Image 1 (tube, rainbow, N blue to C red):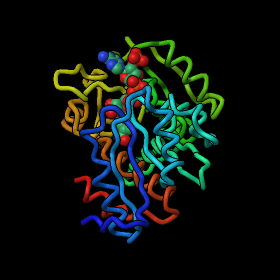
Image 2 (cartoon, helix red, strand yellow):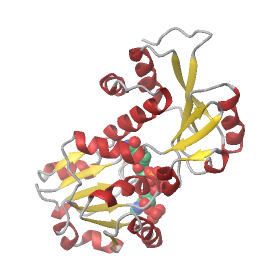
Image 3 (cartoon, rainbow, N blue to C red):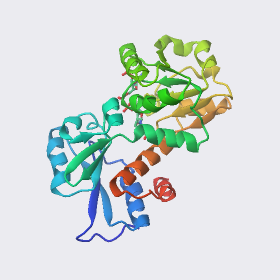
Length: 277
Ligand code: NAP
């Protein structure tokens, strides 16, 4: 139940385009209600040409801060006063915190993913990891996987993007390599890894191709997908006896971390999880 809006209510929001299907208001408003913080979260459909004005509005309205989603995560960088080093590396901001008019950008996606992994009992530390994709989510997740894994292999449809991401991640920890997209059909690739992380958008839409040949998945594998539901990849991996994890935990934890950045208080994670479900 949302607390009553008062003259003191502070606003947090999502800026994206489109935003109609987001579950974030449900999750964040449950958190405000559970903690007794006089706050409220709304979703604003902000077209790209209005982003600059909307960001100025964070200051003008004295908002707590905002989350950003497609298409604003990269475009917002030059509009901020400060960018956290992790968000700078990723090149994308998903959370802005308003510190007395100073707008600070963070990216909670990578940490959110790692928290969801840990919660599912999947260890990346010392493991051999295969990451499919080299887009924005791969940069966020790869930032942590490269630190923890004993090796990280990236495969992406567009090879140049995988090469660039591997070069950047090797500056974090030199354990990263790139394999050709055609190797996704070879038994050798899966034989040499313990954990598979799909960061591509394949599986989002009905009829999408699988992001890798699942023939060689074994029960010893852990297969994770950043997509929120049980994708065909996860269904196939599950049928092979592998441990699987979808992206709903990442969504929860990136939101919990944003709530903590805005309020300085521990997020009521179980309340937020129940609200998402
Ligand atoms: P992005 O920057 O657009 O990257 C998309 C990635 O998917 C690229 O590697 C792209 O390869 C690959 N891809 C797209 N279509 C493909 C196809 N037909 N065949 C092979 N590869 C294809 O998107 P993103 O922001 O990284 O998001 C990726 C996924 O992560 C989305 O499904 C998103 O919903 C999910 N996500 C989840 C969370 C969460 O909280 N759970 C957070 C962020 C993102 P190319 O480079 O070759 O184009």
